[in-house]
Length: 229
Image (cartoon, rainbow, N blue to C red; front, side):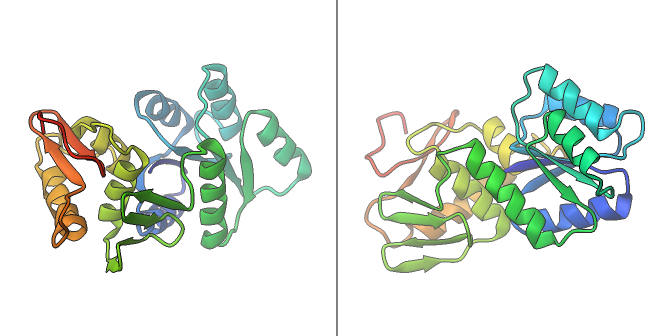
């Protein structure tokens, strides 16, 4: 999952980013309203965390402009204000939820997960592909009776594959959802992580689940691969 955090206070942005990355999110940060609009238009985000008090354009204006452009990604607004009128304005501008500072990070995380579940009914608590199971709540995985330990980035990539079983996922699509804007397209890091995941979910099992389609990308499927794999 990829998140845009729009926050002009450097320390707050860093804390939110660190916490989300520890829970397998890829995080980009924008420090003002104009930068937020630009990044939201050029990248594919799963959710936007938008502070209200921003330079250049405030969060209300950013939210309204995004919704006017048919931007349907969930938006969670953050603010130090607690007046009811501010909450109403935030929701009327198109925000999906509203959280007042200071907040507990676990509450923020729960709000994010609730918005993601609401936005996409294909992200259940438990995902299964063949005998491979992924728990999207506690980020655990198992195949058959074997428990699988995953790093945050391994989990993010495996979740993407399991949400799209049988679909060919190219490197650009994987990078867009699993890495942030600092991803180097010339890097072989995707291949490295695919190798790690394949070792964890396929090694020791009769039928492999993760397949490489040369020159195109990767497919996670419980069905036998086609001749092009």
